[in-house]
Image (cartoon, rainbow, N blue to C red; front, side, top):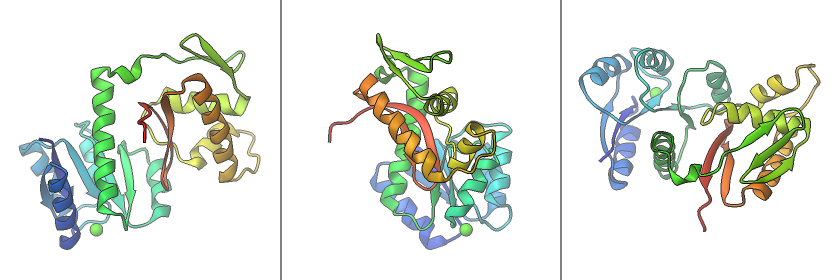
Length: 230
Ligand code: CA
C-alpha cells in the first residue's frame, strides 16, 4: 500500500484529503505545521507528499527546497491561487505536479495516481516505452517505428524542449521565452495552437501514444503514455 503524507493546516481539508486517499487505497498521515515536515520525513517512510504552500512555521516553498536537497520523494504542491503556479514553476523547485485550490478531492486522487504511475514507468521500463523518438534538428523531422513526420521550426523546438526533460512541466510563458528569443509579442494562445498542431502530427506518427499532456493551469509536459480506450 502506498503511503501519502498530507501537509495542510486547514484541518477540515486535511481530513477530507485523508478520507479520499483512504477510499482510493492509500495510507496517509497529516501534518499541520511546516516545521514538523522534515523531522517527520527523516523518521518515517512515505511515497508521496501533498504539500500546501501557505503553512504556519515554515512555508511549502522552503520545505520543498529542503526536501530536494536530500530526497527525490514525489511532491505535489498545492496553492490557493492559480497565478501562483506560474511563479512556482519559474522557481524550479523540483515539485512533480501542482494543484490549485479549490480542487475536487477526486482530481487530487487522480493526480496522486498519475505522479506515482509516471515515476514507476520511468524506473521499470514499462511497455509504453517500446518506441524511440528520434529528433533530427537539421530537417525538423521526427522519426519513430520507421515512420516520420515533418514539423515546423516552432513545433520542433516545442517538442525538443519538452522531450529533453520528460515529466517536467513547462509553463506557457517559459515555452515562449525559450522559443521566441527575439522577444516577439506572442500570446499564450499561440503556444496552445502550435501544441495542438504538434499533437496532431504526433498522433499520425504514434497513434496509440499520448506524448504531450496539458496540465491544467500550469502548462505542458512530455510523458509518453499508452492511450486508454474510453
Ligand atoms: Ca494553508
